[in-house]
Amino acid sequence: MNRPVIYQVLLAARARTRTTVISQTRSYSSHPGTLNSIASTRSKITTLTLHQLYRDNVPITALTAHDFPSGLVADNAGVEIVLVGDSLAMVALGYENTNMLTLDEMLHHCRAVARGSKTAFLVGDLPFGSYEQSQEIAVQSAIKMVQQGHVEAVKLEGGHEVAKAISAITRFGIPVMGHIGLTPQRSAALGGFKVQANTIQSARDLLDTARALQHAGCFAIVLEAVPSEVARIVTESIDIPTIGIGAGSACSGQVLVQLDMVGGFQKFTPKFVKKFDNIYDRQIDAISQYVDQVKARQFPGPEHCYGMKTKEDAQRLIEWEQEKKSKI
Ligand code: KIV
Image 1: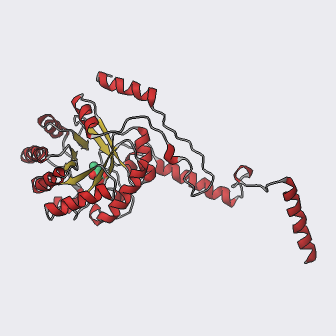
Image 2: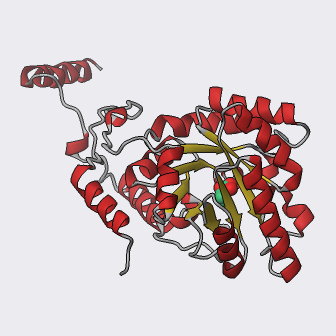
Image 3: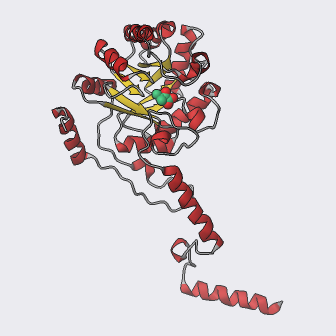
């Protein structure tokens, strides 16, 4: 495989230095154990790291996380951008669409992810209704995302109509990621979750929009569900990274919804999702075994049970029980 040299160097360095700790001890069902002491030795990913990867033509990896464990696992697996996407509305909260998610709900999930993901660059979606009405509202929401959601950057959907909001947010020092092509918050207006920019005119419009977002100050742009050729032309025509989802391999990076790519969300699977695992089936299997073993009194086994402090106490307990029974 013809990988850029810098990528081979990064892989080698990661193999040498990464001390991801997967197993921890936990004594009680709700005890946090040593989870927070997980040591990933990689340096904190910043916009500068992302820019360097982009300049070196090394694909940037991004993945969504919606809670503490998914943030932790994405970070420990080595993705560079962890995105608290508003996809969480559908895949984690069971809403019909992403527009039902409120800013408060988003903040709650961002905080949970931030507690798990310590080294990746953390981006949070501005939910529908939290940035469109005015630049002031957009800035207020973005500040909340940083201050109360503990994210480092925000992502918002849209083109020319949100360019002023993007400029305003970036003026306050908050990096903004754009999102064009299929923008799920507008899926009703787009006639559903459909491929975008697949005519010559709409492809030209997409390029024009990408340029406008770069000009407004975005540090990167998500391209969702657009033909690969169009994504390639956009990527080659702008000077900031494109992060593709259903946009082909020529983008500067890729993003997927974590629950989709591990096979944890069964309701529907977009064409652009590759299932790298099938954890839904594996969870069903594990939980069915649990149910069967509890019914058969095979679980818990002796190794999962506590004993009395001393043998003498155990003996006295039996005697006390017999004494009690004999009095009845
Ligand atoms: O909400 C989300 O998860 C997203 C990504 C799929 C890009 O916007």
